[in-house]
Amino acid sequence: MRGWTLQRTTEARAPSPDLATRINGALRRLPVWVVYLLGALPALWLFVQAATNTLGIDPVREIEHRLGELGLQFIVGGLVVTPLRRTLGVNLLRFRRAIGLIAFFYVLAHLAAWLVLDMGLLWQQALADIWKRPYITMGMAGFLMLLPLALTSNTWSIRKLGGARWRWLHKLVYPAALAGAVHYLWLVKAWPVEPFLYLGGIVALLTVRVWFARGRLFQG
Amino acid sequence: MTYRFKTPLTWADVTPKATFLNRRQLMAGAAALLATPALAKLSYAPSRYSTDEAPNSLEEISGYNNFYEFGTGKEDPKANSGAFKPDPWAVQIDGMVDKPGSYDLADILGGVALEERIYRLRCVEAWSMVVPWIGFQLSTLLDRVGVQPGAKFVAFETIVRPEEMPGQRRAILDWPYREGLRLDEAMHPLTILATGLYGEELPNQNGAPIRLVVPWKYGFKSIKSIVRISLTDGEPPATWKQLQASEYGFYANVNPEVDHPRWSQASERRVGAGLFAGRQPTQMFNGYGDEVAGLYAGMDLAKNY
Image 1 (cartoon, each protein chain N blue to C red):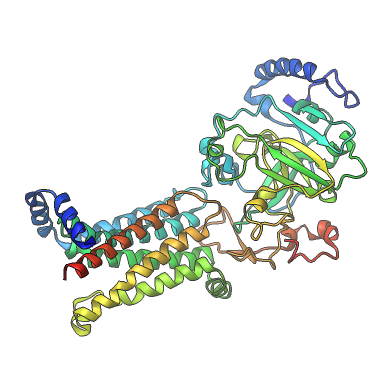
Image 2 (image 1 turned 180 degrees about the vertical axis):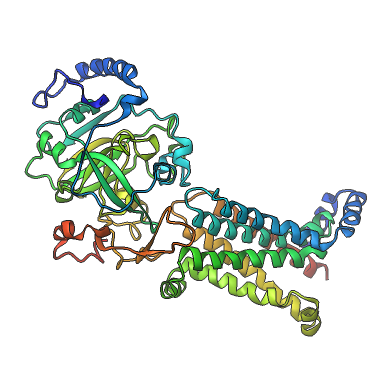
């Protein structure tokens, strides 16, 4: 019943097929390397700002936080692909690997910034913090979940693992995204708005998937 | 020099409210006349309590701090404090004192000799700075108002002015911001009320016109823009402790061995030290142990954090 209702609403909400088709046609002509290039721009900008000392009074914190936030933003971008296709018919699937890999590299850079710039390579304290501080544990767990996804984000791995297993493995991005958002929320004092927006957005994007899955189930 | 003019009133003679209000208008006028940049320079003496560590720049100190009344970001206080009016200003001193009343800032400053105190500042968030405050010992003010024998604590309150302090328009914290000290901590010579920074009056974002500085405690104890000081016999409320008692205690002494539940306090990052400066070890009582450790003799500092 629920699935049927959802099916109807999504169809009703979809714009005229012409528009989606036209967007998809334009996207097909867009080479994937353009996405990688666009994804690298914020990193490049950050590097230029660091080199010219225009990152404000505490550049270490600025670099660390901005890299982390970029990681979250690209994770959210990756999670948007499927709902966008199912609701509006716009197909970004071809770019999803690039979006995911860019997200991973920002998270990796965020981790490196924490370890090198913030912790100053105090390995003992860093390891103790990963173990003892829940928000750092959470961030680290998110990173570790993204790691196998980044390593298998290539056609060879998909072939080797087989589509079903590969898809199953890549569902790890859901807990990883949640871990990232909770990691952000857990480290702030008082209750600023931004971490709630990320967590709320990610929860919404995951909830939409549950609805889709149920819809498919009921349909079948 | 603005603060140093004479008033006809003495400390023995507590100002009646009507007179006080009247005089405040006069002084607002006088202050407006005198408020030229050249006169904003304060005169002060150096202090043996100053550290010889290099102070952070005025830009760093006034451009990067926590003052949630102006927003939760560290650049917010500078960006959002332009409309704040620290003049005229009066501090209500009450509770267990011989001479309670509303004291005009000029009254308070009329009887003190300003000193420069270059102190380390350690934030509970594990960053630190070195700040050249201008101020005077809190003990001199408490002595002048006469602390009554039963008093054991000093409570402080920040002004509430949502129209000038945009952060107060949201209930991020339970306004007014409150803090407190044990009486012996308040009377300690290291504890000062600061009215200046780098030889000039405090910028709004750093707690103008008068704030507490307790260098051996985490920064949040050093309450800003004070409008009320009360002597009490019980432990006064403290804003961060009220919000999250498991993370922020009443004492909040800098202590590398007692971690914040969510992060280590063993080391700190000196703001302005450069991209690859790394961290430095945090010192017990922020390096003021020789002076203040005796205040806590026999206390379990892991419990009384």
